[in-house]
Amino acid sequence: MSVIATHETAIMTTATHVAPPPVALPTPHPSLERHPGFQRLFQPEALTIGLILPLETHAGRPAPTMRGHVEMAQRAEALGFGALWMRDIPFYDPGYGDVAHIFEPLVYIGFLAAATRSIVLGTTGIVLPTHEPMYLAKQATSLDQLSEGRLVLGLSSGDRFSDYPMLGIDYETRGDRYRDAFSVFRTLTEQSFPRFKSERFGGSPGTLDLVPKAPYGRVPSIAVGQAQQTIEWLAQHLDGYLAGVQSPERLASLGESWHSTVRAAEGRNAFKPLGLGGYLDLSDNPDQPFQRIQGGFRAGRNGLRNYLEQAQSAGVSHIALNPKVSLQPYGEILDELGEYVLPHFASHA
Image (cartoon, rainbow, N blue to C red; front, side):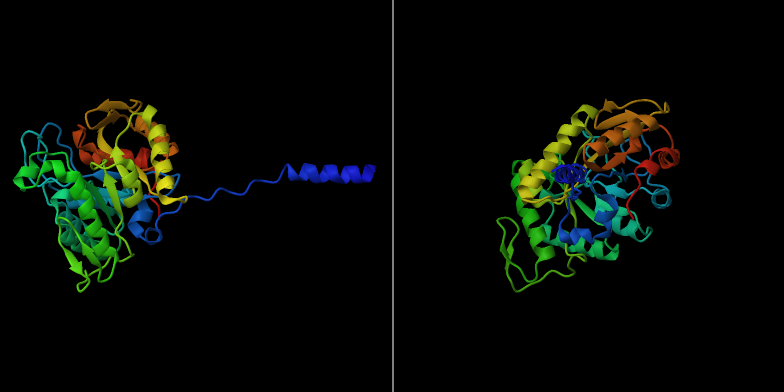
């Protein structure tokens, strides 16, 4: 009896020390597992850093000079930043006092694609309700081909009321137009000779096809802001979500809300990245903690690193920073972030 009892005890003791199987990480859409730009920026449980253009500081002035931006883009790439993000602002409205980087974003992406090799080129974001989606599809697939898979297309509904009457579009319909335009965009970029009918943007009986197609099967398309949609709709249809910068105490709830909504929408352990974007006023006090400013935050390099560590723990995969409101020369900002912050949040190979 004692031998049997001892043997049973040994079995029970061994069983209690068996390690649980590893938890599988969430996975993106199969096409995005092969997309170089998506993979460089977005991985579960890791955070990368990008820059919102212009690549110069000009606090208090509506327009940048745009001098030396190619060299600054190459410098950002050499330092290891993950992405350069372009905004979509077609007209100067003095009421807003901001013209971003002046140039049309998709034209500018094509220009910078020829001057860089690995850095992702994205939009934050194309104001989708004001764009004809069939031409946008052609532009996006062409850019993704020519940049060798470095395009990430951020799509917003825009927050500038004055643009809409200028274009003859009803501002109040922008949420419906967003959904309609996105459906046309996805259909044309991912299906061959599709049959479709849009309420606002035409259709096809299946006799015409868009060329080129997305080189990896899909152009990564993320929501920039909520775009007049429910979070559930974004989680079901988009490949990710770029929210505005959140205060540290709100990061965990934002991350849990987004990722749980994605799992419910997809019915599987899907990976659709959560990102943040906004202004960075880089303080000359390295220990300055997170401090909210309009449209973003102020922090020193150590305070920034602490904030990014909290964001990463909350499930944030990327942050797009716009340091144009900082007082230092832009090159000094890049060097400081490159030395003290980027090594902790490297872009993915």
